[in-house]
Image 1 (cartoon, rainbow, N blue to C red):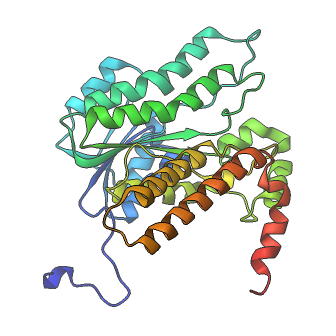
Image 2: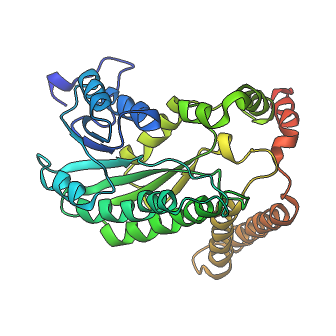
Length: 326
């Protein structure tokens, strides 16, 4: 470490020092908070958005390296933007597009098609354009949601996109490796968009979440921004959907343990197979590992069949347990 990079006690190098982050839809909401955080962590940023005036204000505030006012779903505009990048980039954050709430009877198919373009075809176009322009071990990071995971009237199109996004991300990660692809699936986040959707029900929703979430508060955009920077800095992460669990898995009416069950079950299988077949493990250690694996699988099974009720209903119990003396 040279004298110019010597750190004082308690200091650290910024996680994204010297890296370049492209933000698609970067002038408002979660993407803006993430962009600000990326700048604090030392990254240069290149911003795109539809609203040119707002984009320029944000670019001036953040000292953006480059901006482009464009409609990201316009294939020609998007290809031109990537072709005109000043050099290699490290990360692409994609937050373009909003939610879709319409019943089948009332559905505006132009709006539905637009939504599908933003959430299904846009990731493919961005991934293809990023090939050869994103550095190895860089990441494409998509901002998704969890609200439409459960079927409901008015969520027909939204559910199809939300449920399918992790599979799309996993396949893209194979297609463009060694570049990485990740997904942040946020639940309720206290943003202006949430306020506009909920209207006069916003305060009641906030109170409900404060009462039911184990963290005892509502998730803010800054929380999601902090999560979003992690897969940029951690080059071991790819093809992984990251859920803002405090905001989503404790939503009233239940939650989806499926991803957790899949990963834990896979771990249980690995432990069990390893414990049963290793030739280089002492008998006592192998028996202990096999016992641990069986216990883990039993816990998974129990949670699978008994865990359908949301833990949020007992979240106050969890908080009390956490505060109780050991």
